[in-house]
Amino acid sequence: MQTTERFQNTQSSEYDWLIPVLPRSRSNTRADFDSSISLGALGAATARTFEQDQSGRMFVTIEDDPWATILADTIELWANNPAIFEEEGLEAPSPETLQKASSYAKRMKLGGLVAPDRIVMDAAGGILFELENLEEGVRVVLHFWDEGDVELQTFRGSKLVDRFVMSTPDNLD
Amino acid sequence: MDQGEPIEQDELLYRRFPLAASWYDGINLSAEAFGPHRENDTSGLSVWRANYKSIEDAARGTGKYGFFIAVLRAGDLFTRQIKIVPKPYENEPGHAELPEITSYNRKEKSTLELKEKLKDLVLRVEGPYHVIESWPPGR
View 1 (cartoon, one colour):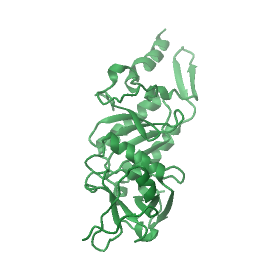
View 2 (cartoon, helix red, strand yellow):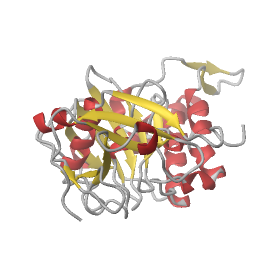
View 3 (cartoon, helix red, strand yellow):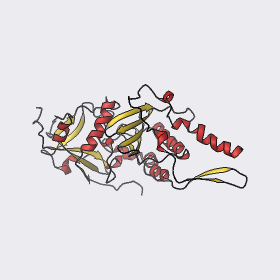
View 4 (cartoon, chains in turn green, purple):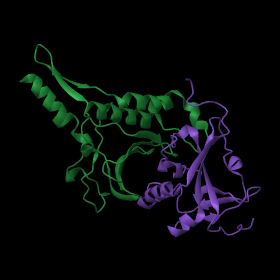
């Protein structure tokens, strides 16, 4: 059924690059911890609902949209107010870093991944999506470094137990 | 300039960071409050010694949205084998640095973990101080 295939394609390929659970997707920076926590393990938003219209087309609706609020308070605010980076101790993220973080957020939202607890900048022009307590004491950070690489880091307490560089698609908008 | 008085166990240390960074939301503190600047923290991360400076003076930075102060106790850092060295300079005898966090090693595993440790050692966050314009801008 065409509509189902559309839906399945959305779930199984378009967003697979966001769910790097396969060993082949790990970089050499992988730590010696076989973590079950990854971006894919964040799970789908529980408020997601599925609907079909009269022609049988399937739609996915996300009832709650924490993404919209968090993006308005961070990335969009930073992009529209570059003067804030004149504050001591801060360096402005480049337009490329802002765009990449925004594109990731858009894809993560459409892919049904939970929104981060907060989005913060680092002091060097990078951006972080921070997710707390995915398991007790486990914290996951998606770090958009100023130099362009995007890294998924998993902390257990203060210990960095896993880190690897994401493979970002070339056509990410 | 001499190397300054040795740092005592019970000394309080102040780490200043800008409100505009969104590293503190009133409840949660991000470890990025202990992240080094790409160019300005070449020899270590700056902190201020409470024995030399009031918290209001330590919070005096360049900017208009104000600054928070994360308060640490030196002995807590020593217990975790985190180094702190006095680094006084002209008219700033209470300046000190954490030499293990620099602009050069900001992506290393040890640095990322040290930032997390420091966040966990924060006694309290005070401020914001010296707010000239309200945050966020344009609202």
